[in-house]
Image (cartoon, rainbow, N blue to C red; front, side, top):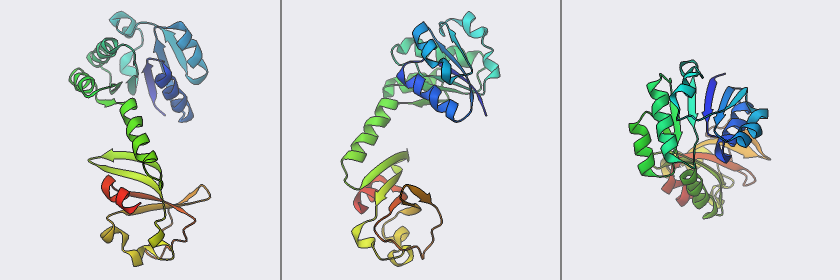
Length: 213
C-alpha cells in the first residue's frame, strides 16, 4: 500500500482515485473546485479544497510524506506545470503528471515530472488498433512498437500446438496466456493445442500482431 497525493479531480482524476481505492492505496485528493472534492470523498482517505499552485497550501500537505504524487489537472496546463515544479522543489519522491501533447510532455519532464501520461493519446491509439481489426479485442502498448494484445486464434493455428507452429520463430510472437470463457490460464507450453474457441494473450511488435490477425 502506498500513500498518494492526487491533484486535480476532473473525470480523469476521479477515475484515478477510484482505481487507487480498488488497489487499496491511501489517497489524499486535492482540487480547487469544491464540487469535485465532494464527489471524490467516497473513494479517498482524505480530500481538501485548495490551490495546488500555492506553495503555502502545498506546504501544509507534507509533500515528502507521500510515496507518489499524481497531477491530473487537465483544463489548465499552466497550473499543472507550476504544481509539478513546486512538488519536485518541495521534495516529492515521485511526480507523475498528465499531458495532452508532446510539447506539454517535454515541458513537464523538464520541470520536475518523473513521468508523464497522455490519456487522450493513449485512448486514441487503443481505439484505432482495437476497432481497425476484427480479431484484436484488447491492446496494451508497451514501448518501442511492442504491445500485448488479446486476439482470436488465427484460423491456420486451429488444431495445432505452439510447438508445431513454432510461433516464436515463424510469427515472432510470444503466447503469454490462453483465455477460455473469460478465464485466463498461463499454464501453456509447446504442447498446448488450439481449438479455436479460446483467445490468446500475445506479446510482440505491433506489425507482427497485425499480420498474424
